[in-house]
Length: 527
Ligand SMILES: Nc1nc2c(ncn2[C@@H]2O[C@H](COP(=O)(O)OP(=O)(O)OP(=O)(O)O)[C@@H](O)[C@H]2O)c(=O)[nH]1
Ligand SMILES: [Mg+2]
Image 1 (cartoon, rainbow, N blue to C red):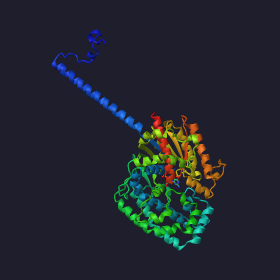
Image 2 (cartoon, rainbow, N blue to C red):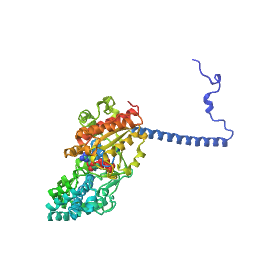
Image 3 (cartoon, protein in one colour):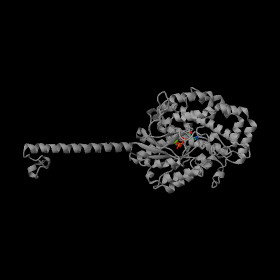
Image 4 (cartoon, helix red, strand yellow):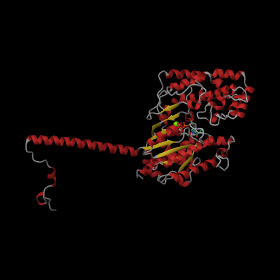
């Protein structure tokens, strides 16, 4: 083989990079300084590029999911379910922290009852209900109807005299306890005048960049990352301990109030159906109103803590939970079909489950954005729309007869439909999977069993007054909107759920989780 000789093929290409002969030692030093500086700049650029590449890889590797939907649709509850199923150790560490929220939920219900009783008993005559009793919107179905108010007054005055007055007096400290606990969380806001709208005084957690809430009861200093930040104020431990004592001391009176037939009649006649309210714990007074109460998983998913802003939650799927979940996927999917309304070809993509399993379950960390759902908070969502793998959209199906808290002229179901239309039409979300949860199916069934007519509230509905029929009908409506408004064609995934049913929800979320991961891998062209 002929040898390549520089002399025979022109100048040696490597000599082009050789330093020029130095004219003097000064020239040489200057040249070396220039080269050192050039090397430094080059290294800096290389380091920047490496950092960018690493960040890009990290970004591509992270699955981002956003929970969207109106207020009280079940977004935070869905997040709790995800944590409970897939990060059980982290979940267990924070469970006890929810005690204060559950105590507040319980007291709030009691104070709502006391408000109704005061309003009814203070009405001057059955024919002339007081302004406060007829105008305070205490519940989604609160009626200001004159006849109902008059009946409620009669029920109260017929059946109760002294015992109720005494009970009201004995339970009066709970009003202060509610305010104290709210303040302890650092979230008390607005007026403490009890004639103001109770719903607007609902305690909440303001979110700052997804940092942790620390409540005083967690022995591990457990945090509620999924609901955002809000540190207990100084001295709050004492306030909470004192509040717990008062609540425990009021247990018998709370039970007597809730189980009193005349009180129940008055509530019903006033149109206040507390079982429909978020954070309903009145049937659990025996367990909750004690000094040693520790919340169960079921309690925590039923607890109500409003989200304000956007919270970023890092969900790290725990190894054991992930492998257990994986092992049960097949079984779970068959059970999930009972809660899944999708047509067979609409199911989340499941091909090559076994071959993809390794890389599938390696995707351990997700970022989940949970948002405040009321109208004033929706503008804040937009900043998080880019790079999402999936949107979990929560639409409460039971809300066909309720109005938005922030605008009593708007039906909640109509609001969900309008919100879904806007979300699926967003160009920023064009590549995100859209997964619809028609939530609160259990409450829908209960309302229908209670004889509430869907057609009365939704005139266009001309089918049987049946939960499954209605859900199927509404699901089709959501599906049509997705097909019509999506900037690019994409599949529709729809589930009907009861987010407080943690077993069924675990099955549904396992199904959903697998589909999301697969979609992420497909996007990244790994499979
Ligand atoms: N009965 C019933 N209650 C539910 C269901 N899903 C959620 N809830 C309850 O409804 C209340 C509101 O749920 P959240 O998850 O806090 O609602 P959200 O969408 O996060 O509301 P915002 O934070 O205000 O946007 C909580 O008390 C939940 O326990 C359900 O399917 N059935
Ligand atoms: Mg929330």
